[in-house]
Image 1 (tube, rainbow, N blue to C red):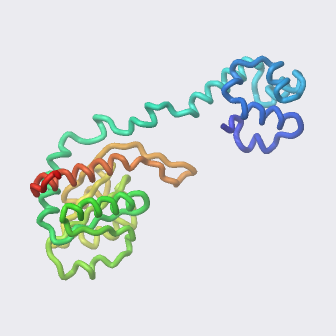
Image 2 (cartoon, rainbow, N blue to C red; image 1 turned 90 degrees about the vertical axis):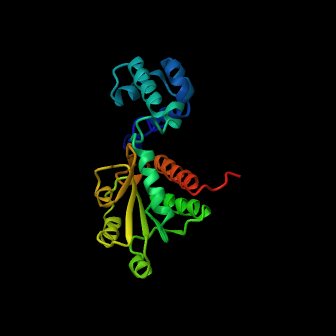
Length: 247
């Protein structure tokens, strides 16, 4: 845990470095220490510890301990936060009704294409494999510039299922617009935003609610569990409608 931030750490010199490193190495014990305990552990004097504490912006050692303990708790995710990724509010009440319609469309299609980029592309590959197991002629496309039009132009009853958390991916939108007025292709989306451009282009939108999470501005850490749940629910619905055996 970089309590004081990376930039502050780089400016530390001399005994301050020893104090800083000791604090980080004994994070759980800091709230229970006295100044003399920290000084003895870092092999510095009590006065060196207090100069360090004031340099970090605290007027007293107790104030520092309270702030340090608070940040330690905030930086440690609880078990509940780690496992409770779905809730009753994640999916709309009409989801199963839409799944039934999508399953009917998929079962009567000649070609089913699952498409997406990034982590959504990984889910698209999984969805394609899962539905192929059920006898659906499906394949994934994770390259938005893949020449789908030449591949599908001689076929009828195509289904293009797009996975996108934001529903706004420009490259994916560009590909979908090529099929917007194609009577041979039905557009379906699995997205976290029901009012997004991708959802608006779709005949059916399987939507969910999630909080997008990014680090360093653009690295996506948003959970794909809601999309995976919809994919598996779709597979179960297809299986039920096709009356495939369960063993």
